[in-house]
Picture 1 (cartoon, one colour):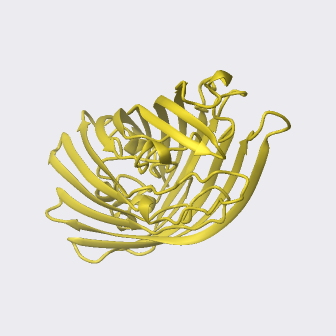
Picture 2 (tube, one colour):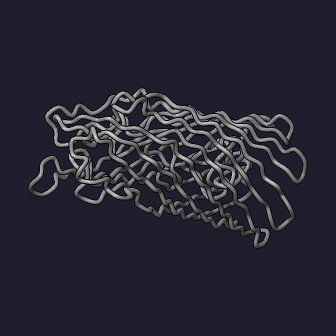
Picture 3 (spheres, helix red, strand yellow):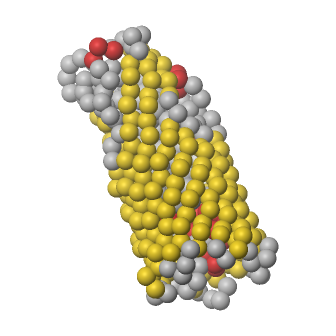
Length: 369
């Protein structure tokens, strides 16, 4: 549930954060696999329930160029807003080879807010997107090598945007809510009980929200590897493709808000991770990831979402309270590349540079019952 490219949030729990979410489509570590790859559900032993909380603390600071029309109004302070994001998962046995999972999560979301007045207030003051996603799923172990899974998603999205397009009066504000259905599917091939290859697909979801693209959630495809090197070490890797470039940007001609996703491109994310099983009680994790931004150039970057390429550096662990309970925790720092912006709206220009980073802390409690 942490910041990924654009306004996407990683949909897994704290257990995956320590590995920078490497290998999630093949790992099947807990009930959260129903979201990342439902084919992993048969690998989850017994009945499991998990709760997670994520604290996302972004830093987003702008420096205006002299070319900005309203540079004298200031840089807007730190536009990053701390978010708390909860999630929950459930896994139940239906038969020996078929398992049911339910995920409640927030796959998409973002908040930014500038101190007014500022040089870009004609484009953005406050931006807020929140989602709730319900994802029931089934996983079936076909044989000792192959497992497949299928899930359905219902997602509700709430959006609020404000800006001040002139020097007087109250800010312009729009708010809207919509929902849509989608699906996810996957497969896992287990070579020898120590090596698994996972493939997971998530469909697009469309919401009618002014100022956001359609589809709101792009489709994605992940290929993951899980390798148990020995009883003490696991290696994880994956690559994820996301179809940001397949969206149809909202036509904002004559509307009250400028377009956010204009001419975005498809992206890839690459991740590597290691897990060390130190004892029956403790395991430790580390991960590294590189993630592309869908924003192709400064003219298409929005101050609501000044996205840029980033590098993830993550670590975490698990403490097992007993055979039926465990606590997972993780921390990640996202190093964001400096991003230029050069936007013109109704003859007003915003030009400058963004510098930012994100810190994420996650805790998860899992219990068998």
